[in-house]
Amino acid sequence: MSLLPAWLWFAAIALAFWGITGVTQKLATNRISSELSFIWFAYAMIAISATLAVFVPIHWHLRPLIFWAALAGGTLNGLGALTSFTALESGGKASVVISLISLYPLVTVAFAVTFLHERLTLAQALGVGLAIVAAILLSLEPKTPDAKP
Image (cartoon, rainbow, N blue to C red):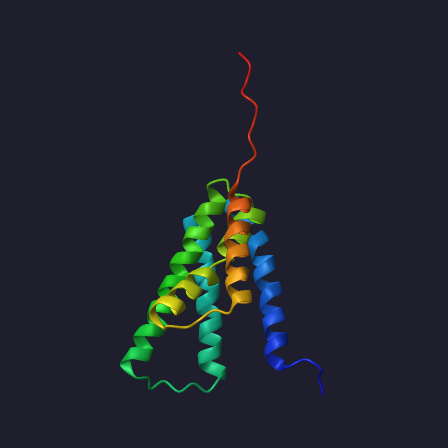
């Protein structure tokens, strides 16, 4: 029996996959356009989805709200990936771009507090504040000295 719950193992594996992904995305967008890089990304997602559809029993009957929520989630995820590729292709450093976009839970927290009326503890609010400070510090570009004529 494992000392750690299964969800924690899967989360750790996802962390490793996404951590490596930041590097592979930067390598790709250094050599091909963000659009072409995204097309290959989407192709890989389709291949994984097709494999799941064949080998994993799936309950296909969904309520319309759940269907549209899943479709919206996939669309927003795809648009987020496309814009992250564009940020990398536009000269963003992988260490900064990926770190910044990884703060997306702040948006989730804002929506959850605003629309779902969830409440944050003092420690959680402090964590959100520190994440915002981290985003600001990560986005600061070092000043370069003016070029001499």
